[in-house]
Image (cartoon, rainbow, N blue to C red; front, side, top):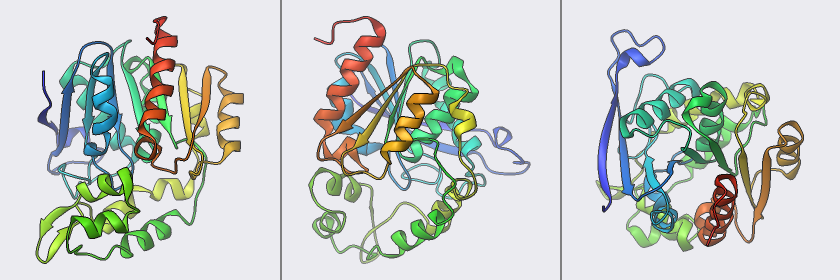
Length: 284
C-alpha cells in the first residue's frame, strides 16, 4: 500500500464550549505498512510531511499514520479551540478513524506534539501501549514562551521568494528542507500555513503551568529522545526517569530540537530497538 491522504472531521460537539462552532478538519497521511501502529504528532507550526523520512523506514514493520495538528498545515487553520485538551481529542479522533486505538499503538511526538502524546496517554491509557517523546516533556511553566514564539514567527521574511531561500532561512539540511516544504505558494512567493495568533494561543497553557501531574499518571513504557544540541534540558529528562522508572532516555548525536530531522537515522535506530525490546522482538 502506498501513501494516501485522508481528512478526518472532528465534530464541533467534540470541542469544549463549541456550541455553534464549525467542525475541525484534520489532514492525515496514511503511509501504510504492516504491523503495530505508529501515530506521529509534529511540533508547533510544523506539518505531517516532516515525518516522511522516518515513516519510510518504519513501513516495513509498522502501520504509520501522521496528521497535521489543528491550526497547522492543511488542517483547519483557525480552529475555535487550541487547548491541549482539544489536541488530545484530535488524537483520539484520528486513532478511531484508522482503527489504531488499542494495546499495540505507539504515540510518537516531537516538541508540542510530544506533549500532546504525553497528555493523551495520561488521560486515555487505553489509546496506546507506549510513547516516544522527542525533545518533549512536562516541564514548565514557561512565561516567556508566547512572546518568544511570536518573535520567532515575526522573524520569518514572508513571503519567501523561493524554496531555496526558505531552506536557507530555516538552517538548510534536512530540517531546512522539511520546514520549507511546509510553506504554500501565494502572492509574491511562499507563505506559512499557520497564523501567528493561533500559534501563540496554542502555547498559552505552557506559559502558566507544568504537566508533571499528567506525567505521574502515565503508566506505559516511554522512550525520551533528546537532541545533543536541543532545547530539552537533561535534568528534565532525568526527573522524568526518577518519577516514571519505565522510561528510557537516549541522546541523538549532532541533533537539535528537530532531532527527527537532524539525525533521522539515529532516531530510527533508537526507536526500532526500543519498540522491538518492549514487544519482545529481535530488532533485526
